Image: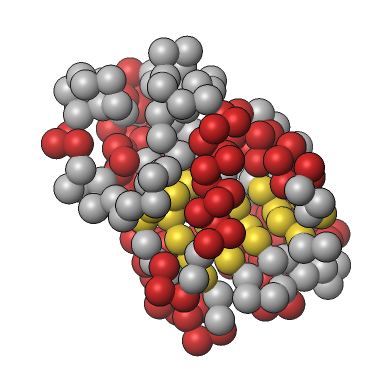
Length: 219
């Protein structure tokens, strides 16, 4: 029975990942924020220590924060506090979680590391527009996703000799609390398609940024 650890499992895509992987027979480790705060190194390390020598075959860094409030979203109203809160969850979190879990990922079988990103973090796609077609906003979120793309590329380079694969996935514009009710993709459909991509990941996919249709997202 393979083991998967999913961050941000309390709702949205994280909860849907939990449901689908459990239904598929995986052993699912699904810490909520009360179990492991991805913005707190001490919380992360304490949770990993409680796991013991458990092999992790798949890590899904799903926890994320968009924070549409003006102080993190709109130029002219940005504050350091709001931006740092977004960066802590979306950039520092995946880096520290993956680092802490690396010994357990090494115990897995050809382990895979997946980071959920967003087309809004791409410098090449979307011409700076939002999913709904509007102009630039979500400044902190966009910047954080661009940075986490670079994190994945760094991990891919560092871990390739250990037979691990690190890939970025764009879940699409999903009807979750973050995506809103007018989004075009259901959580069930998004996760089903992402699971198929994850299952098909091969060494040549290391470091790729992959859309729901399996195509590489330029960034």
